[in-house]
Length: 82
Image (cartoon, rainbow, N blue to C red; front, side, top):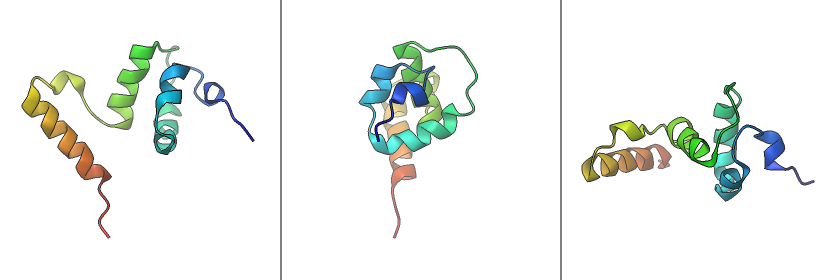
């Protein structure tokens, strides 16, 4: 069975959604299910994914140090401890 992502995420930019790693779709669906706004452009979809799925605030990244800190924090959340 094939399901079109544009039917699952009709308010997000389908090109952006198709470019995601399939492992992120469940996380995206969880946050998208609470979204009740307007249809998003590609840039707005990217911002939504960065802020809601990855929980990163672009506004708080002012330099390389902030970016590295944010990425390390993100990697730490994704790490599995046996």
